[in-house]
Image (cartoon, rainbow, N blue to C red; front, top):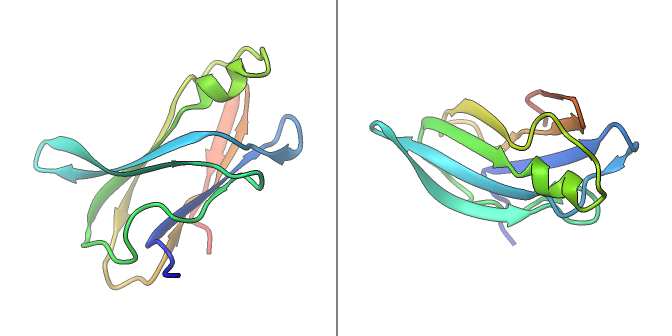
Length: 113
């Protein structure tokens, strides 16, 4: 099985557990519009291991996380119903891992490995 060029992992820092069932969409900027190229949902470990092709051309991409639906399933109020992370990809790089650390009223991210 090939690995996606871009993977993600969502951790719910409020509960201290992986965030399972978060819908995630991957988009590429094509001129002046965003085009969805892949979608998935986090598994029980909070990961989306297969999100798009194993190679992507250089460009600007974004991951959109449906955090509102994730928190709605537990009846938890959230300030951020969606989190969108925009980043640059160089096709020379073998892999991009973009984790999301999430709580109802804050989030952070970084370039993982």
